[in-house]
Image 1 (cartoon, rainbow, N blue to C red):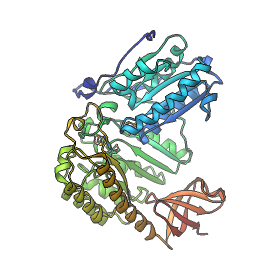
Image 2: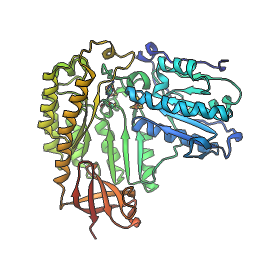
Image 3: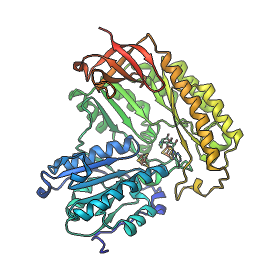
Image 4: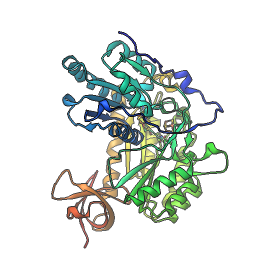
Length: 474
Ligand code: SAH
Ligand code: SF4
Ligand code: F3S
């Protein structure tokens, strides 16, 4: 297979580097290629909110080229997969898709296929694409989405092109997103991660922690408000770290307060690390009614021994203390979490401590995962004797308790009123609409379609494990 003109392979060692090189703040600039006008694109997105938002950038670029979205893989002229690398099953899904694409390329070799996202930042994966999937036209990473236009134009002239940069990363402004919603919007505030939790691939795939300038973030939020958006979610792998890289005393609490003062009706943020969640942050959340009383606070494990092996920088006791402080100071706050079971060396006693924390905190919800070794991370090299079956049993035992409390929290809302931002027609019942409470609970609501895009009072009439039913209060 002939290789493309500029081959730039991912490099895990380089991706790990953190130097004192200053962050460059650049503008997204797109060159126009009219040959894509009217062509159809198919885009699949995997992974976290950050990837969803990156896909909004990808769609913005394709839109600029005059391309049209298409839901049927077989009818598309351009196929793009924006991938995730967080756990093994994320890979499986992508390679499953590649099977279908390979078949399609045999019938229509002119179809252009590009793979981007976090998986592209992994050495082993790119090798696999090079050797086993030569029909993929190009591979790009998380640092060069803005170059997608050039890669697309090149794809017609060259064979497989790999352009993945393993770098600390820069910040691009003036990005034109094609947003999925007219009601809620993602806003990046900090890119990358420097925490290097021992199980996690993100610091390698997304570069170092680098904040966007506060003025740019506020400009974006104000613009969204003027456009009629009801809600913004401030995005970062660890939003608490916002501003630290400026080294001028700027903190997330300052940003959050300024965003609240724009008057946008609803503000959310993800994700918060329990390690440096400050009192000032709690105070600001409690002070402003437009900052939603909902915090996603991943604990990962309830065992101090495992937390240490994970490199999480807090203990079970300090987590619970923070949790209680939030509950005491933020009225009506809902708190959800992430938990990993079967981390290398996790014993039944360690796992029992995780269950104990679930009993203590009684989370509103939890995303639970079995540990998945990621090549290049320290945890992937740790000794792991627990059989898969045992890990699966632990996950089941954990989910049983987590779901019990989710349902209980939902039931506590029965016959009460909650403010719900209505997002669209309900999938379950087309006569209903759906939306989220301030505390981030999904509600199917008896209300006319005309209230889509509004925050309305809803009386909760039924509570299930993962959703609520309700009727709009006139
Ligand atoms: N930045 C966020 C997490 C992003 S990844 C934070 O620190 O909270 C989302 C979740 O995926 C993590 O919270 C963790 O629970 C899970 N996760 C990450 N790496 C994993 C791995 N190797 N195996 C299993 N779960 C993992
Ligand atoms: Fe991964 Fe830890 Fe960074 Fe979260 S804080 S993205 S779990 S390294
Ligand atoms: Fe996945 Fe990358 Fe997000 S690994 S979870 S898409 S940061």
